[in-house]
Length: 110
Image 1 (cartoon, rainbow, N blue to C red):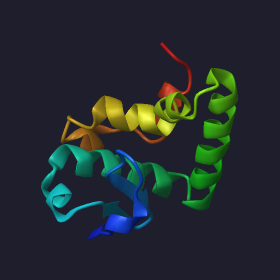
Image 2: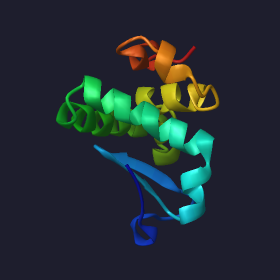
Image 3: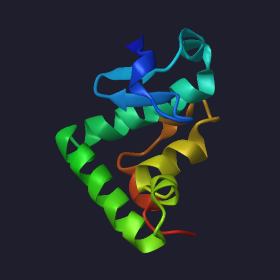
């Protein structure tokens, strides 16, 4: 389910997934197939990790990478969940062919 909530975002962020919702900054983003696909990939990741462990892993990986890179935005970009979603967001049938736990392929930089 995609919902619009303008006041939830800061800076350039326009979408967020909190199981079972995809939250977007403006109504027009509901039609952005690439953005929605990116967020749907996160829904799949959250489901396969049973939601709460996903968020714990996400935050821990972000903290680790923030220390590693000394840059919180670069850390965000390199979280395995984000790397999988960004790498496949334009492949609109990705979720049909995606193997379980595919984000594990993105933990280490290639």
